[in-house]
Amino acid sequence: MSAVPSPVVTQTKLSQHHYDYLKQRGISPDTADKMKLFASQKFFSKLGRNADCIGFPYYRKGALVSVKYRSFPDKDFTQESGGAHDFFGIESVDPSKPLIIVEGELDQLTAIEAGLDNVVSVPSGAPIKVADGKVLPSEDKRFSYVWNAREVLEAVPYVVLATDQDIPGQALAEELARRIGKEKCRVAKFDKKDLNEILTDPSRNDPSRDIKEAIESAAPYPIAGISEAASFAERLNDLYAKGTGKGHSTGYESVDQIYTVAPGQLTVVTGYPSSGKSNFIDQVMVNLARGVDWKFAVCSFENQPDIHISRLMEIYTGKRFFEGKDRMTEAERDRAFKWVNEHFLFIDTNGEEPSTLDSILERARVAVKRMGVRGLIIDPYNYIDLDRLNTTETDAISKMLSRVQAFIKSHDVHCWFIAHPAKINRSGVEQPRPDGMSISGSMAWWAKTDCGLTVHRREGKEVEIAVWKCRYRWVGTQGETMLEYSKTAGTYSETMDAF
Image (cartoon, rainbow, N blue to C red):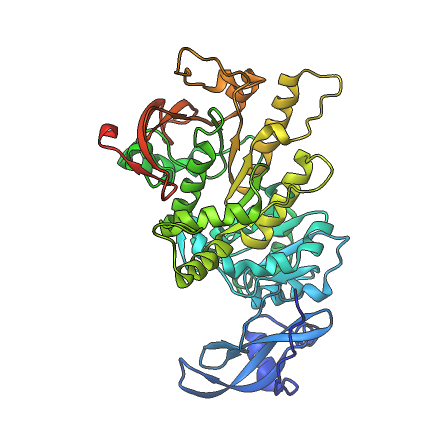
C-alpha cells in the first residue's frame, strides 16, 4: 500500500480530567500513555460544536497515519479525513505470539489493563449491515485493514477473536475468520457485551482474571465436527418458512428452481467444448455481483484476462465491446470497466511452470484478504498439475477436491470447478448430455462436489442447464431447464419452455 501522508494533528498531553474519565472505564494513566493517547479539541457534527476529546492515534511503520477522537463528557466520535485503515495497536504486536482482536479502542485498552499483550482493535467497529448473522458484501471495503496487516496475520501462531457478543460483533468475528482463515482463529465467549463491561462490573472480585480466562479459553473456530442444534435454529426457521432455495439467486427464475448458490460449497460444471459452460458461469457471476455485491477470483486457463474482462463488460452492459452493431459507448465502456474492476480479481495463469492447486489456493487466499472475494472460478481443471505420484487419477482428483472443499469452508467461498467430459460420444448429429460420470476420474467428481451442473447446447439458440447432483435440498434439486443464448449480446435469457 502506498505511503499515507501524516495528518496535521494538534495534540497535547492528557490532563487529570482526561485521566479521570478513563478511570471511570477502568483504564489507568499507564495504559493510556502506553498507547500514546492525547488530548485535543475537535468539531463534532452530532454535538454541533468543538469539544474536548481524547485522540486514539493510528501508526503504520512508525508514522502517524490517522486519529480517531472521542468527545466527553458528551459522547460523540470523529476522525481525521480519510479514516483509519489499520488495526489500532498493530505497531506493538510481536508476531511470534498469538494475536487478540477486539472490536473497539476502549476494549483494546481494557485487555492491556487486564495484563494481556498483542492486542489490536479493528478501526471501524462492527459492520452496520448484517443479515442472517453475516456481514453483507456491500461492507467489504471496510475490511482493508485485514489486507494491510497480512504479514502479521500470516506470522502469528493463531488469532483470538474477542469481539462484542451482540449480533454485529459476532458477524464481525465471522467475517474476520473468513478472511484470516478459520483454521487459524479461536473465538472468545464471555457473559457481558464487551470486555470493558467485564472490567467495570462492580460485582466481580477479579475482572482482570475473568478477562484473561475468557481469552485463554477461546475455542477453535469452528469446533471441528461438533455443533449444537441451537446453532442451526435460524436456518431451520428459514427452511420452514421458505422451503428450498435458500442460496443466492443465479439471476434466472427457472434455474433457481433447481440450483442456487450457497457460500462454502463446491459446484462442478461440465459440458462439451463450446457448449457455453464458461459463458454461463460468467453470467451467474455478473448476476451475483449485481444482485448481492459478491466479489470473485477468476482462474481461467483458456481466457486471457483482457479478453475475459471485455466479456464481463459485455454481459454487464448487454452490448458489444468490439466493433459492430449495438456497440457500447465510451462512457458505457468506462463505467463497465470500473464495475468489473470493483468485483473481479484475476489469478494469473501465464507462467511457464504448470499451475498447481497450491499456487491457485494461495492466490485465492490473498484475494479473500485483499478484496473479500466470495466466489472462486477454476476453469478448466485439466490445466492443473496433479500430484500423481504413486496414486491413481481418481485418487489424485479426490485429494485435490478435498483440499478445495477445506479451503472454501474455511473462507466461506463458493467455488465453481469446470471440467470437460473425458470422451465425446456421438450419436448421429446429437451428443448425449454428459454428467459427473462423464468426467475423467468420475467417481471423485461425483462424490466430492456439493452441486453438479451440465451446460448442454441444443439445436438453435437453446441451452439446457441440468443439475445431476445436489447434496442439500435447501440449495436445489436434480432437474433441468432451458435458457436461450444470444450470440450478439453473449448473454442468456429465460425461455417460455422453462416454465
